[in-house]
Picture 1 (cartoon, helix red, strand yellow):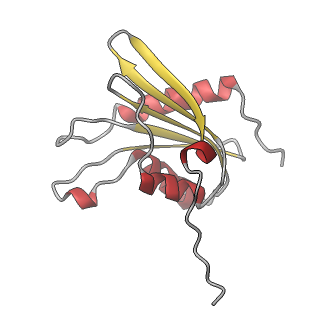
Picture 2 (cartoon, helix red, strand yellow):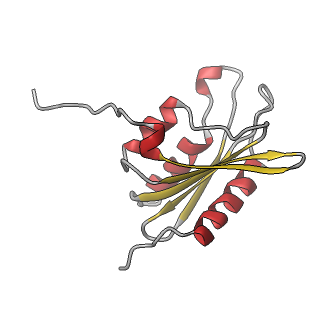
Length: 141
């Protein structure tokens, strides 16, 4: 099977899917809605949105939600990620989400988009740039 190549068309599709997922976010406490979309080497796209809870520690981030769907579907090779938020500037994945993403890949394009009243603000980055010093569990003892 041929692996999917990331290009601007696919990144645009990822942003659109993340935007759609953001519309379904459950954020009654922060009112900060987040949508995420993960593209895999197989060409599949998995989406997630944030799901808040009155017990804040039980909240689920959009990125981890998308990764969970990917794993549940039997997929394991993310090659690009898009995150759509509100606010004046694009939101970046939290530290926990970054660590979960690097569990599956050390680097991939990451597109961060903020939906603003005057239009989108986009920042293109990479997972390696967002997470330069990853935690690795050494079980060799």
